[in-house]
Length: 263
Image 1: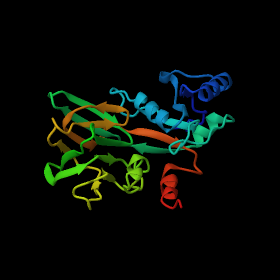
Image 2: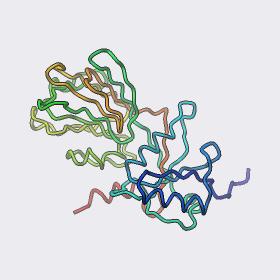
Image 3: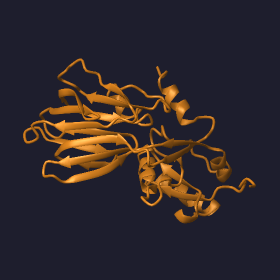
Image 4: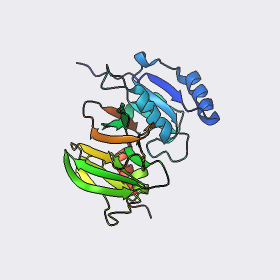
């Protein structure tokens, strides 16, 4: 079967900032703009948050392998993004290297019994809602591992998300292909010396909010927040694959490695 050597057909999307909108107009004039059904890849113009939003937008339950996304940085940090450039863009996307990610699936049950499911590419966080610290019980694969964690919160991070909120909370940076999830406390008060855990990516991580009436807890999966949760389960959803495209000279694996040697 002959190789398909044609340039990829591109779908352009942009954040609402003036800079991104102006770039979108120029790229559309230069390359056109395919609709999703007739595109080979999505080019996202914005910051890391917009890239995550774009990846979530590509999810379709009828298609567990959505379009790959090539992000170009028009935001502030741009850890998951390539440098912005307008020249020879279809060929550049065609030469890019793909990284496949499996999101976390959060199932949260609120105190009134409402069940909410959401996906997270970076992390799932449980956070206190009031001035009082949260009290959480942690179970791994149904086995209680920590009977009570008094804290501002706790999070589960994917390798791709381990350099974000997880790292700011003093969690470990996880190599991309390590097959590991990071479980990291946020300002743990008791037990004060607990620094979290590294878990196999197949683990089912359960959280029970203790004393919910006095110490309400929220659960956040990327941009989805669920208030007043009682029980939350998090696992990696291996049935869903998301693909991010990177310039070959600076892949995501290389970025994660470099991040560990920053002064």
